Length: 225
Image 1: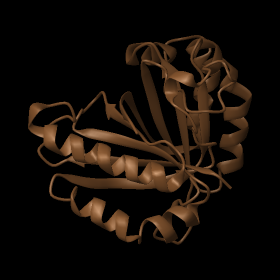
Image 2 (image 1 turned 180 degrees about the vertical axis):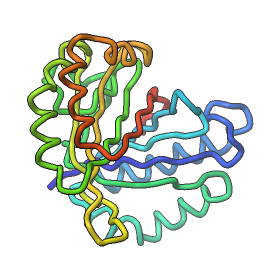
Image 3 (image 1 turned 90 degrees about the vertical axis):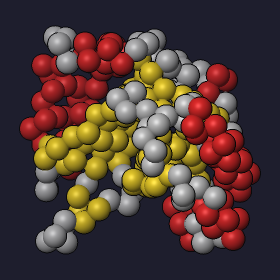
Image 4 (image 1 turned 60 degrees about the vertical axis):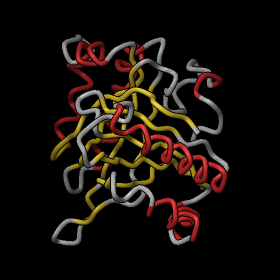
């Protein structure tokens, strides 16, 4: 099953990817993501976090989790590429989602496709990570599915894509820490915040009854392989 890779990286100098101090590493990053894209046969996109530009998200695709973790990660090419990055960058986290990966450039993706793809052509993308209370995965999914139309309507003309983390973390009691990731497109991050003040959010907000936490950030597309 084809999957979407989502990873978060941090520049150790606390500067953004477009800062003069990171000019050299930016050029190397472009080489690295082109190498991954060539191997995976899916484009790789980097998005700069709005809240703290020293963090960047990597969005890519793989034919399967195994292709990424068991073939690409231990490959000599990947090890060499990572060696050139580790002095300047660190991996914060990495995960795989059951979302259809983008297989073409963002500008050529129709953002009216019903939301099956991450809306990278939007000026701003909200990345919402929802951490589900134990035993409440089905309840959360039901609440989200029944109220998602409010978010769809508010975000137009941009779309929404969502899915479950395929490699969730484990709690201390060995239970699964289910995580749901939601991407939504916006003209600006501020427009997303306005959704929380809308009438439709009263219904959509019921998903909070099944959450033990959430992390909501915004990002803008910076680099595409």
